Length: 164
View 1 (cartoon, helix red, strand yellow):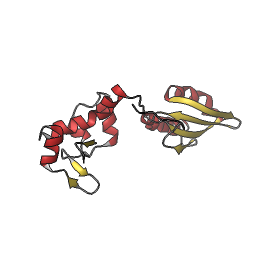
View 2 (tube, rainbow, N blue to C red):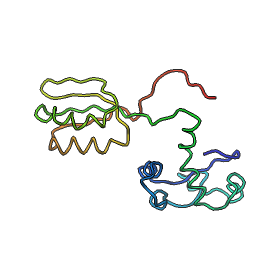
View 3 (tube, rainbow, N blue to C red):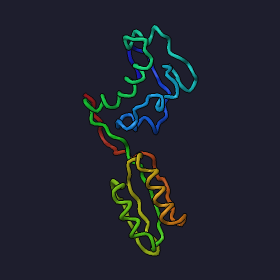
View 4 (spheres, rainbow, N blue to C red):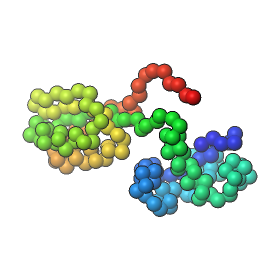
């Protein structure tokens, strides 16, 4: 986050951030790797106290970390933003294909292509938060005979972006 002309970063566990924003995770210590505020997490450069007090009006690092975690929710109030979808291709043995497709349907946002010859081959878009569940379903239901390939980590529509 950039605020007051300065850059601020916090160190989080990515999978826990989504749970925090969804209200599932209540314990901030499970989300944050540390309660420090950085100018660069990867280099370990901690922000100066006077900079974050000036930008946030407090020296309470826990409260600053909670503002940072809420940024996406606040942006959604004034901008139309949503998570980018992942593009996947999976191939399922014919025997389990139909049954497994029905279990996967609620997790799939868009089916781009589908081919059912000797096996079911499908290219689809999913919400990244569903990836683990899709992967486990395919591995368990096909007993390792099905394959899952990530084609892209984000689905981007080309076009004109307009910020107001």
